[in-house]
Image (tube, rainbow, N blue to C red; front, side):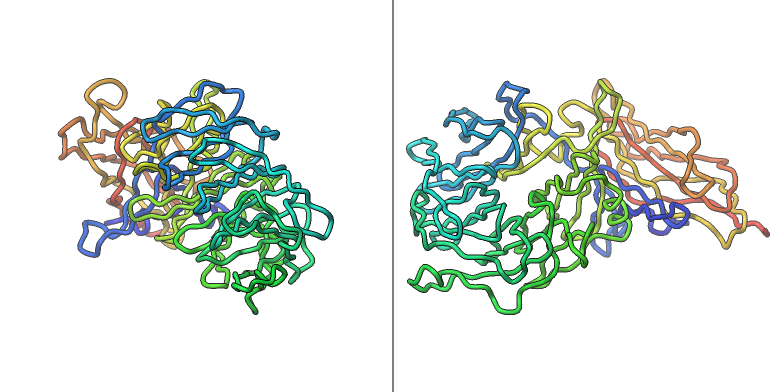
Length: 488
């Protein structure tokens, strides 16, 4: 018989005795009704080196692709540079800050506004210059703020926040270097601070510590009324993790805070926010010692829209798939330290037909590549553990187990030439597992190979766990067992 729900998302609940499902470095995919199985688990994209800027003492802080000039803009440490379509690097200069997330927005006047949380700079995309914005900001008045952490663009106007107040500011139209004293307003629907902002569907989302509200561009000539709040959009669902704010498919996503949302993950639907985190994900997040350092980025991959949420202090990365409404986990295996860590990649930009990301620990820029089965040469451990198997506390005798997967995926030489899949068995409901039992995935062309195990004993509460570490294409389709329920 086919094991029910063997293909599924990550879901380890508050009690492993209830649910202890793991889905690591595999993402669920919904197939067509006439397919062999309506769901499958696919190995996540690996990381292949695209460019190395050669200084591991400064790591990535942000990426931005300009479709106007076909350049990929990067910040690493205090250095700002870009890569053209041929991979040639051009240095633009330095900024004062050396760490923290950098964000970008672009107008139609060949200007990119770069903010670092401490200052703002204008990049001239044609002249290849980097100029610091020095327009003074005074208390309770406009100008350019001293602590801008986020930037957006609507109809010619750059918009930035002051991360220490509830104010946001906008430039003159089509002129990122001019910031008038009257060009500011306050997200005053709630008295919390303004953690960040993002533009979605040409509207301005302002996210505070415990609330959010949505504003629009009025078109009025009066500076004081240039932007106004959309009535009825205020909600008590804020964030304390400004770097978690991201956007994809006309939706805004963020790590929640406040009475209605601490430890939750929210996604906008219209002007409402829908909780997309499961109780299991929330239980994991609330157990972390720090939340305000969470970093989120989104990317589109084939028929999936992924939100990648990393917690640096907790050393954990969770990934939500907007299209399937399922979660899975990303990890990076460091062979030199023999340790499994959070994902290696941070930030993202789509450039010349591929998704690129920066390394959190080196000077490399990677392509997220579905045909690469390592993270820059390091193996990727792909793990799935299934829901509990039980029959009203009766003994179940397991005569056999077979994993249906893509076979014949071996490499020509080296590790992966005879790829293996490991089976581990837990008879205490997922708390502890026995030794690894190995089966082949099939060498090159061995499309009829079968990953089978026999004489697997008995249990009242069993969890099967399968894993692949070889650098090969990994697709899990289903799992089957030959089992018999005992009398007691």
